[in-house]
Image (tube, rainbow over the protein chains, first blue to last red):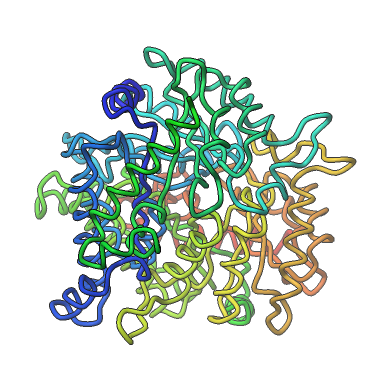
Length: 306
Length: 306
C-alpha cells in the first residue's frame, strides 16, 4: 500500500490527503434536513447525512488527490449508524482508487492490539472463511504502550502489505506536555521516532516503509529533525490549514526525492464552502468548493516545495 | 458514576471488574456452531455468538460483581456486527445494574477527543433531539497527546457524572519502553500520574474522583507509588490472573478505607471453563465456571487485603 500511495501521489502530483471528518457544523443544512425528513431526528439521520455529504465530496475530488483520511471519532460519535457511514465511506473511497488512511489512533497491549490490527487492516476467520471487518489501507497507531502494542499492527501490515502511521509529535498545542519531556538529552518524541525508524527498516516497500509516522505541521522544526531520524518513513502531517500550518512550514517534512510526506487538511477542504473565500459556491456547491480548496492547497504546497 | 461504582463494590463486597473480552478461542464450540448454522460463516455469526456467550456469563455473575469492562477491540475486530454485540452488551449490563467501563483507550486532539467523549459517554444533538451513541459509564483514555486530548473527556464527565481511567502504567511487558523513561529524576508515568491527580481534584464525586487511572497488577511497586500520588483516584488494575498478577501484589493499590482500586480479570473468568481447575463444568457450563472463578478471585483478594 505504501507503493500504491506513492504511485497515487506521483499520478496526481499532490502529496495531499483529505480528512473526511464530518461534523454537524460542516454538513450543509439542506442535506441534514433531507435526512431528518426521511429518518426523523435519529442517529440514522446523522449516518445518512454524513454518507451523502461524503459521497458528494469524494465524487468531486477523487481524481485530484491520492488519499483520504477519515477520522473515525467523527463517525463513532453517532454510534452504530455513524460507524456504518464510516464503513461505507472507506469502501467507496477504495472503489474510487483512493488510498484510505483510517485515523483511528488505536493502541493497546499485545493480543488487544492484534484485534484492532485485524479489525482494521486484516481478516478474521469464521469457521473456515476469512472475513474483513473494517478494511482501511493504513491506520494511525498510538505508541504509549510500547513495542508490544505496536508490533501486532506491523505483523498484520507485513501479511497484508498495508501500513501504519505511528504518533510521534502530534499537532495540538499541549502535545509537548508528555511528548517533549527530556529523556537524557533527547525529547520523548525523538525516542519514539527512533523506534519508528527501527520498525520501519524491518518492513520495507519498494522505496519507503510500510511504517510511517505522524508529525504535526504546527511543529516544523520537529518535522525537520524527524525527517532525518526516519529517512524511510512517510510522514503524515496534520495541522495544515485550519490548525495554522502553512505551505512554507512543510518543506523539511519532505525528502530530496520530493516524497516522504503527505499533508492532511480536513475542515479547510470539506468545509471550504463556509469560508469567505469560497462563499460564492453556496451550500449546494459544497463539493465544488472542496475541489477548489484542494487545487489551492496543491498550488500552495507545490510553490513551497519549489 | 464513581459513587455508583463504590456503592456496587460495597454491596457485592468485591473490588472486581470482569473483562468481557470475547475471542474465537474463548467462545464455546456449541455456541459458535449454532451461530454459523443460523448465519453462515459470516461476521453476523460472530456477532450473534459473542452476544449469546456474553449474556450467559452476565446472567450467571451479575449479582456477584460491581462492574464489567468490555474491551472494544475484541468486538471491533468483527467489524459492524462485532460492534453491535458490544453495544448490546453495554446496554444489557446496565439494565442488570452493573457499572460498565468501556475499555476503548481513545485519545486524540481537542475536537476529536470531544467526539469520542460524546460518542461513548455523552450525547449528540440531531435536530432538537439529544441522542446517545454508545453509552458506557466509564471509558479508558490514552494520555500521549497531553491535556488537550484528555480534558474534553473530563468536560463530558462533569456534565454526565461519568468517569474515565487514564492510562498511567500499563500491564504489558514493554510498557516501560516509553512510560519508564526518566524525565529529570522521575519516570514519565509518574508525571502522567501527577497530571491525573490534578485532573481528578477538579472533578470529585462524594469520596473519590470521576478521574481514575490504569496501573497494571504486574507492576506492584509502581502501584504503591501511584496510590500515594493520586489519593482520590480509583485505580483500575488489569493484569491479574492470566497476565501473572496475584492477590498479594494488589494490597498497595488500595487505600486504607479498603477502596480506591478495582481489579480486572478477563480470560481468567470468562474462559475459566477451559482451565484444568474448572474443567468439570464442561463447555455447556462455561457460565457457571465463570461464577466459580469470580468467587475464587473474590476470596483471593479478600484474603490478600486481610
